[in-house]
Image (cartoon, rainbow, N blue to C red; front, side):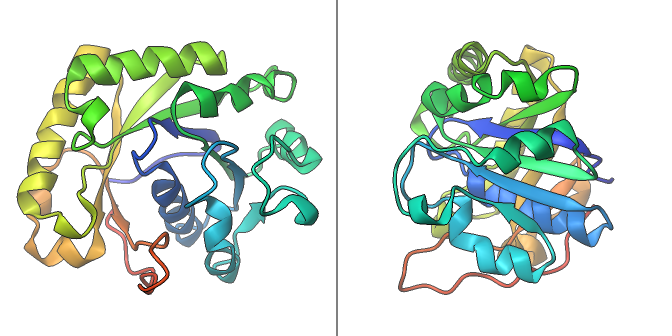
Length: 235
């Protein structure tokens, strides 16, 4: 099964859901599938673990990374590059927008309404059912509603990102998938794909899943750890 995304894809979700890690690995996966991929760092809320932290790795893969102006790279300020508006109006291949967490982070999308005018935006909600606010279907639906109101856009699909970082095992992956299936049925939203850390793949029964799987090579790690190398991805 292929991950079939093109045009503008805005990756949203609650704080700590893993949006940025998903965005980075999705960009690399789609680039390796032959798409022209650009990714914009729109996280203006969280000063840590933003797309800009993986800039060198992404550019080494041939992916254009759009960031705030150089003089504001380390500032926690609501500054948007004018290049972002241009890439949204002319989305060749795949444009990934890595959006900040919760409704506060999604407000940046409302500010881009003029750029979105006349175009289709796929806003995908990343859900980690092992995080406190997203352990129930009701909690996930509440976050969906808050993000949609803040962004002035409608979420069109789900991404399952069940993980406990280094403590993740096969049971977390399987139970997370089952939860996302329930959430998909309750929300009416398709499950676009789920994620699995590449080190877990040898222990996973891939045939259990009826949706695509995106393998994750963790890039946003503490200073005492090394980022993972991008490996092969399942389709």
